[in-house]
Amino acid sequence: MGLRMALIYGGQSGEHEVSVMSASSVVKAVGEEIEVLPIGITKDGQWLSGLSPEKLQENGKLSVEPVGGDVDYSILQSPSGFLLSNLKEQVDLVFPLLHGPMGEDGTIQGLLELAGVPYVGGGVAASAVGMDKALMKAVFRQQGLPVGDYRVYLRKEWEAEPERIIREIEKDLGYPCFIKPANMGSSVGISKASDRESLKKALLLASTYDRKMVIEAFLDGREVECAVLGNDFPEASVPGEIIPGDEFYNYEDKYIKNESKLLIPAPLSPEKEQEIRDLAIKVFKAIDCAGMGRVDFFVLKEDGRVIVNEINTIPGFTRISMYPKLWEASGIAYPQLIKRLIELALERYKDKKRNRN
Image (tube, rainbow, N blue to C red; front, side, top):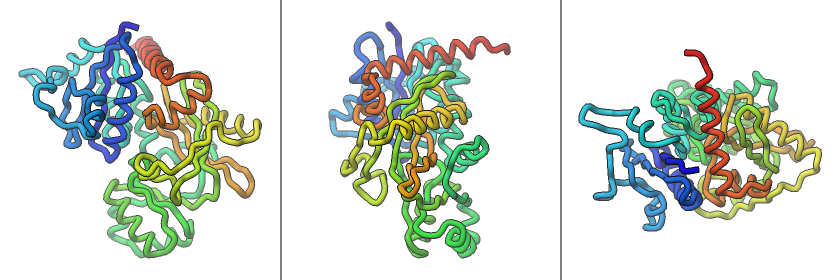
């Protein structure tokens, strides 16, 4: 392709380490035809260019930190301050591999829109809605998509009236239930509550990650995921199933213990598989997503109904992550998947240039 691509990774969210692993996998896979300019963001928000995620991982580090002479601020700074235009002059596009808040939530996407640079993945609105579980579920319901019962509370509501909120959750959702920060990913800050005491602890934990909390009724179902690729005419991969190693598919299970099992393709009837693929595309379109997205479902054990859980607009992107593995099983290898995402980013940018100012 002969392209120069900025790869932004790290970030200020609780998924910093996951981002470093994803970025390292991309650097190893792209080959010589794409020149990668790595831009790491430290946990305190410092932008460092020229810091390779591959070298960080080789040295046993999964955290972006300044390393002597490897750091070059010229991409982002000049004597007069911040220069977005400088980025556009130096790269053809940007691949933001930032998971969670301050990256997957529309913030980086808005910055890149202002810079006028093509970038991989969904736009500002899709990223913001895809990050905020409360907004996401509201959009899904409005679009007539099947979602489970849930409630949304603000941190200050919880702090002001904890007993009222607990009574409402017990009455409306019952036990067990899941408590989640509205704006986090990789299952960070998520707990399963089976009684009043564990519910209090779960709400307290979730409130440390976000000002808004989503409480979901327990669904006794198989965890099935489907990858979506495309812009205006997206395609869906074969679905995969997760057999959690713990009570649910949490952060430790995903990235540390590695005790869960991935079944690709998921053991489903042809009719159920097609239903999930069709529904994944509807979810993708519902938030006006672009490039990539991984849609997570529950297939209820009682009656086989498919319930939409959520969409991830920048899913885990290591070679062993579910999104690339689903496409590999569907006939698109990891290096080809990256190239396709780049093509989609450039296609979307070109299409946007057709808009009248």
